[in-house]
Image 1 (cartoon, rainbow, N blue to C red):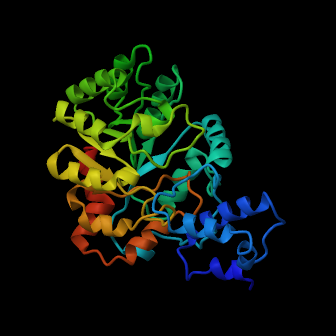
Image 2 (cartoon, rainbow, N blue to C red; image 1 turned 90 degrees about the vertical axis):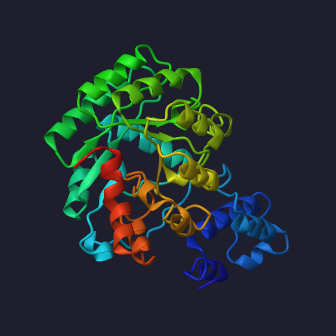
Length: 357
């Protein structure tokens, strides 16, 4: 095995190293032939580039390392292999009509990373339920006006036909009849609302979102909102750093104290701020989606130990991941969490947040 292969071994943080190597190899290729070993990076100084990227705690999905490569890790066959008889609710699964999925996957492969499980909605649900997942919280969103109503109707019909699906609605803040779209989603039986500041290009405390919060609070409709700054992409219509920060969500929490809000990905690079918010505001929840995988920098199992256990729910982001479907469950099984915390994390918190038995 050459020295690049050694670096890629399990002695290193595999995901961080892979991103650092990709970045260094691209920088090296600008002035030299392809590197065959780590020693090739030394004479020209690209070894310093590799080290800076690997040890940087700020390195997420930078434009010079996107798209990411697949992890190609082994997968298990059952939930029970990792968490025994604990009930597992995946509180963060994306379900779309086939054409929307296809367009989404094209975007990911160009700007994010490979999709390991290119499964249609029925295929993905069958895949997860056959492996022992008990419930799936179905998320979706539209990036332009006019998509929300049809997507909401699609998920509502799906949830009606499959009781193990907890369907959420969506709306594009600022689109025509946004309030009525939310009310219709609620009338269809959808259990909450999913919004994405990056994709939908809005600020949580912006004027367009304010009427959404007011409506959801009145309807007692919880909201899952991607409001953390990371992971970001230069392909988004606006820089997420200009739309998102902890203070914006805090203004919403304070203005609408009866509105239940969940921020996925632990709030990503602002995790400390979100943990402090959760201590001050009883209407804030977090989810673990992708953060326990090792894909991004940071010790998120240490974060899990610091977080309020009654305010954190498990999610995966399937099918839009480049690693095994059970990777995070495998990691959780190594964390030696007590049975009570496992129950809260894997099912109880999510079921309570979405008001599902």
